Image (cartoon, rainbow over all chains, first blue to last red):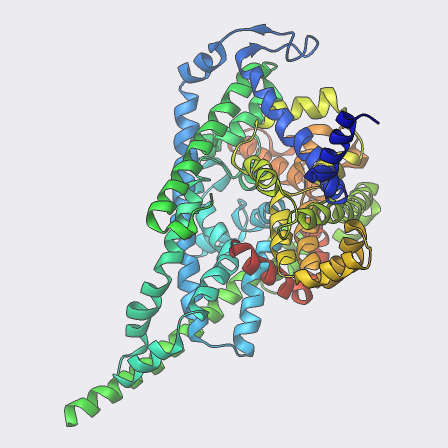
Length: 312
Length: 301
């Protein structure tokens, strides 16, 4: 063996890839997966700049520059779906946070007895039912002869034709999300409340502070940080429409689009009805980019607000 | 003095009132969370014509199991059950294996390039190519259509679960690994013989999360499956709801109501019950794992 090849062998022996070959072997399936299912589709965003022809493939199709984007942005659709996405998500974040903090405070005040255990089991259960099933449940409540309309009729109020009234859906979704998610999201805040130093409460009690006063002057200020942090983190997702929730309820019911058609449902419908992949990919890329920018923004905010809570 | 003790008593009364209100609110909310389950369950056992005539009652005046008989008489629900169970079991096992292997490799300070690899994984949570390139990849390049693999393969690894498990593995004492290395065991042996058996609660948590996502899958059915026998349970439900929504829409537009074939009320409810059955029955026993997962998920390294 020559000196040079000996050097190469020695170098190979010391590189991390050889030294930790077993570890890299364990990592290999996950790496292959992420390359195929996440990074290759990222290359696929090139379709957004093409008149994509499935037979010619990504690299064989004709380039059209920003034509696909011009098409999307020249229709009024993009404003509607963008606004709907932002509006619904803002609504969900605000009501979801308030509900979760409210329930967390109440549950923490009640201690750790059997009552709390059982009611917490009930409250967290809806979180584990799929949106599709919830949508099916809701038919019994929202249908023309459903429970809500029967109650309204009983009270002498005009029934609401839910499946053809777009204006009620943001409220309907808020209520359903509170039912489904509050008990679950409260757990994070309950853990935070559990972490508060008990001696603060004891000192306040000696000074004669009432329960409500302790909540407003100790509990809430002490968990303010985690509330703000959770809020900032949800800003990063504000451009992602909750497709999994909206589609099972709305499907192809065009009457409801004015208020609940979000970017994700729009892209999905475009995928199924347009044959123009390029245009649809352009919308998807617009959403991914905006989402990415917002995640960076949220992280910047988190860093400014509390450096240790920034994600990267 | 008198005024002070007076205000103390008033405050204690205030505390008692607050506690009563808290109990009431918590109890009401818990009941509200459970009520839809009860209503759907009890109504699924109602007699169809009674339900249509009288509406949803807290206790139906006439019971019948016809809906369940009809439901299980059709092969579709049985196929869907089979597909969903098979993809959930196979998918969860495979995903656990792939995810835990990667999580072990990246735990601790073993790999020199672990930060770069972490970022390589993490970046995919920040940016994605979107649905269209993914769809084209699945259909035109991987040909993952009309097969159970379309449920299993795309779910066989999850970045979030990987980071969750990695954080668990970080807590396993380094000395255990070092001792095993001195005994001549390689990393694969250490991972499978020492670290994974020590992390069973963590693995249980992650498998529950991934089992739930396999169980709730329906988009893959819609996008990549044409053969009705390969639909998942959830997709049957999505189709059912959409047909109701569309039907009531047509009804509003003044079309004859008979034109759309709306599934019978109780059959719909029975389907909902049958699909959530396993989750609701297992949930009280598994709850602590889910909660543990959430707590750890919130803790960043």
